[in-house]
Length: 92
Image (cartoon, helix red, strand yellow):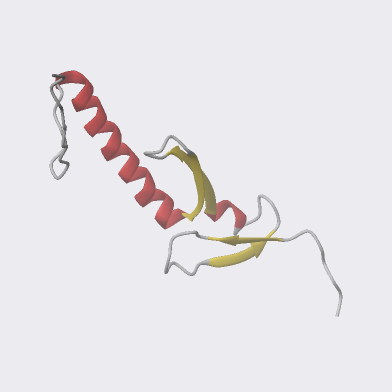
């Protein structure tokens, strides 16, 4: 049995997905996985690898977030399902 080196393991980071492939960079299976980066609520950069199905779902989440944020910036509107609590104290 011959050994062929230079393969990478590609797996979707979404829990329960289970899609895993081995391929060379740019190969038939490799192009089915993408890395996405974002800044989380704690201002930390995060990243994940997604299969094409989950990348499309992630992109839809980001587009919805962008629309919600654009509405907030335009008129202060909060997206449905989001609540805020502000606590103030008067200085005596």
